[in-house]
Structures are given as C-alpha cells and as structure tokens.
Image (cartoon, rainbow over all chains, first blue to last red; front, side, top):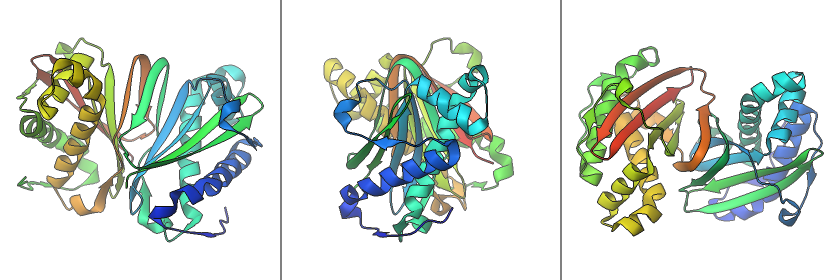
Amino acid sequence: MSVPKTTPYNCLEIEAWSPVLRDAAKEVFSMMAGMELAATEESVLVQTPEITAIVGLAGSLCGLLSVRCSNTVANKIASQMLGLGSEDAAQHRGDAIGEICNMVAGHFKAKIVGLDDKCLLSVPSVISGENYTFHSLSAGRRIEVFLQASEGPIWVALETRN
Amino acid sequence: MSVPKTTPYNCLEIEAWSPVLRDAAKEVFSMMAGMELAATEESVLVQTPEITAIVGLAGSLCGLLSVRCSNTVANKIASQMLGLGSEDAAQHRGDAIGEICNMVAGHFKAKIVGLDDKCLLSVPSVISGENYTFHSLSAGRRIEVFLQASEGPIWVALETRN
C-alpha cells in the first residue's frame, strides 16, 4: 500500500504519533478486513480484552505494539480477513489478530519519516484466556488509541523504551 | 561478561543451537540470580507455567525468546536478583523474570558468530495468570530447553520465523 510519510521520527515526540497510530490501525482494518472502525474515547470501552496480539519493535525505536479485543471481535476479524464461517473463524482468530497486529506495526512505522528502515519487527504472538495480565517492561512512553467495531472495542497501544 | 563465540550463525541449523541456548540460560541464572540450574528432560516437568516472559528478536534472526516458570520459581528469581524478602519478591517477580529473559536473549545471541550485531531485541514483556495460552506466529522452527531449579522447572524456548 502507498504510505505518505508526514511525521518525522523523533523519540521525544512519541505522543504526537497517536493520530499516526490511529490512522495506521484504521487503514489496516479497512484494507485487510473490510472493517471501518470509529475512533472513540477510552471511557466508552467497558469490556475487558480477551485476546492480545503483540509484536516487538527493535532498532532505533525499541518497543512493543499490541492489539487487544474480545473473542467476538477477533472472530469477526478472522471471518472478514480469511472469508471463513463463524466456526472456522473462531479457530483462526489468534492467527488473524496476530497478522493484523503485525500489519498495523509495519504500516505505522512506514508512516514515520526516518523510522521505517531503522526499526525491525519481531514475529507476532498471541495471548488468550479468561484470566491473564500482560505488561511490558518498556519503562518508557506509551500511546494508546481506542477504536470501535460494530462487535465491540479494539485497543491499539505502542510502548517504547526510552 | 566474556562470551566465547563458538557457534556459527546458520538459519538452517537452529536445532544445533539448543546447547547454546541451554548454556546461555544456565550462565545468566547463575550470574544474575545465583541459581545453579540442572538441565533436565521434558517429561520430568509436570507443572504448568504460571508466568511467561518474552522478548522479540528482529533482524537477520527474527523470532521470540520466552522463559516460563511457576510463580514460586519467579519469586525465587526476584528474591535472588534483587535481594528482596518473600513479600517484596512476589511484587517484583514479573520485572525480574522479564529482565532475566532479556539477558538470556542477549547472552544467547552474543554466543553465535555473526549474529550479535545483526539481531536486535525488542523490550521484554510478561504474561501472568491462572488461565491463559500463549503462542507465536513464527511458523518456523522452535528449540526448547528444560531446566530445573530447586523450586521447580524453568522452560526456555526460541521460536524463529523462516
């Protein structure tokens, strides 16, 4: 996909990347899963995420990008991305949200001038369960965007190491 | 720490890295936490891991390194690394196992000729809970070593993307 680069890379200005992350996520969901997401406020999101996809970033930007949602939303992503019925979609929701997470990270870093070729992605991973906590040891900065699909909310976060 | 490089980097020979990963893990646990671990066989390990630390690798080797153990073992790691009593150790076990994971990954890649400066680490992250599953989308190769502390088993795994 063609990616206009409009935002210069500056580690001190990660907070300014929030709209870039939001746009990257919205564009990937639209292109890959045909899902048009609305940006929303955190307070609207009362559901607890059941599934978390993560991908590491290493290089001049070192951190972690995560995408979290309910199983219902993940089923929808799998169904839309892979053209599957509901039963098959549930089986493939982990892979689907993992690939979406990977693509959001790739699309996000492609939007930042001077970052794309200096920041590499590790492989995506997926955590799911009824009772788990997840946190990164980034001890740095964090931006998070809140998106709304018709099936429920989607959280996209970037945590960076200073 | 001084790291003798004895193993050449060759993506096709990841299985040959198993002893390198085992040694890297044993050395880091010994040096950082004063824990002398014994290598063991998978079948000995009947406990379920309660806490998982992961760190992404990106570059010429793209993958994920994970360290898993029980909360009891993680408490011991925190207590030994940070010199804490049992209550404080429980509070810091996530950070402790995350840092151990990061150091095992760094020490491992430093042991492979031609890999160290071409493989970067993302930030470590920690998953904990009573009921969760974790898997990477590496779709590549996986090596795992099984270590035994006096408090219980420790799993160290490397998954790579082909």
